[in-house]
Length: 304
Image (cartoon, rainbow, N blue to C red; front, side, top):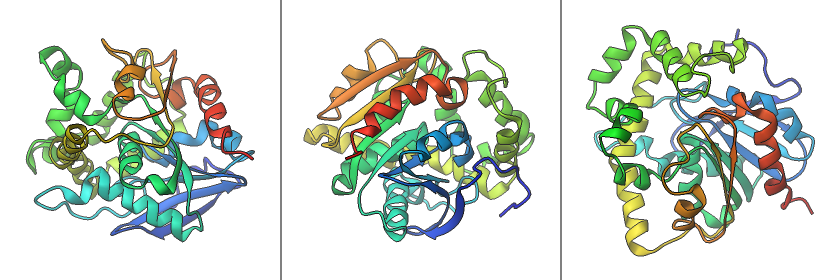
């Protein structure tokens, strides 16, 4: 674990907690109802720093790195990509929270972390009080609508999911340039101005590591295979997430589309709210105040 990175969570303690097959790095702070924060690609728990302290004033905040990302362990992927399925990542988080003493909690996930969050809603409804997903639609919904226009926009879904080691080798040729292009191109401004330089140091540090480049590719390979299969099974069986779900989406991000997020998520969850904010994909860093204002009332329903 790299220990010389900037401190973005003053007053939080750090922990490395055994998950369900991986060691999960997390930052823990605050008091009150527990809230698990899950980052997306190509980031780490550091993305939550703009709002973590505000949330910690009312909640016990656990900001975790998904397996393969940040400072969590990065097991080598298996042939079926099960180790990086959202089911496996969700099991990590349930076990980690249990070890931290939290039997039930709210979960907030951005991007890939949002996919872990809603999979937990299907697999572990008894452990969750509510689910918030930031700037995503269900994996099934994206693959089902993937025409040439959407494919041009979502090219990384197909590129990163290609068989190993082709994408790993291409990214490793200039991994930081690839990382920074991805971050900039998914913002509304199409540049890096939204990102704190200290957070960028965190993202660059993990994206220089071969094992983690492989892990993020495995994450997307799982998305195109086992995750899609699990979503399809739930869809065909008519199953819905039973805990309340909030969709916060960037109006210039990936969470919108021809159909409203509320309409799409209404097919996957029984109780849905949706709020748009003026941002691209990286809501927390592009529009922290607006995102916090959308998220806090939803989480506050767990405050007695």
